[in-house]
Image (tube, rainbow, N blue to C red; front, side, top):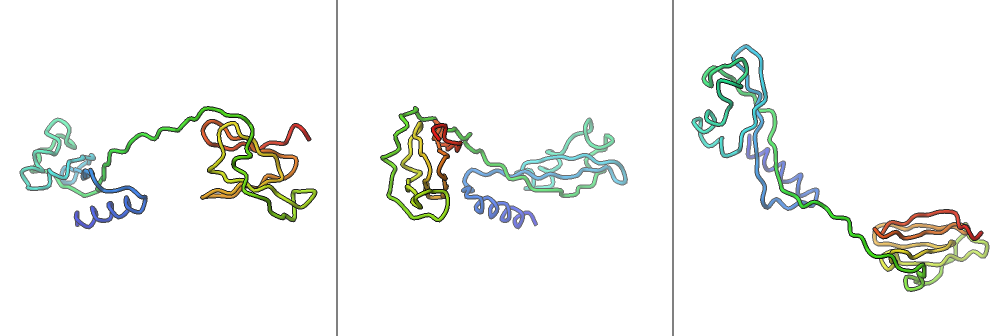
Length: 171
């Protein structure tokens, strides 16, 4: 049933956090001449309002499987296509700043590994700026993740908000 398929498609979009406003639907059929070869045909949902609309939307004599006339064909529903215009994501690029990350420091914490004195500096990921560097031993806490930087390593923030961890050249 087409309405059930549409509801399932909308449910899938909502599960991905996509609002269903502005959707369009198309139906893909396998169109075959009775007993012959077949070819796919995609028609807009609006073509399903009546048999006349569907006949008008199907390929004509030139492209229909084997040149069959519309009355000589069979249709098999293959899939419902859900179309939604989505904005193209744009990666936010921020200007590089200095290496000082003290503004993102949130305290210290005892650690059992990665530090000669057993203490890690704690930083807030969301407060870091491009160009900032953090020398280990450190824990960088964020909304979605936590990173551990052991002694002898450092993390540098790039202009896109990515952190790169490498061996500290000063050690």
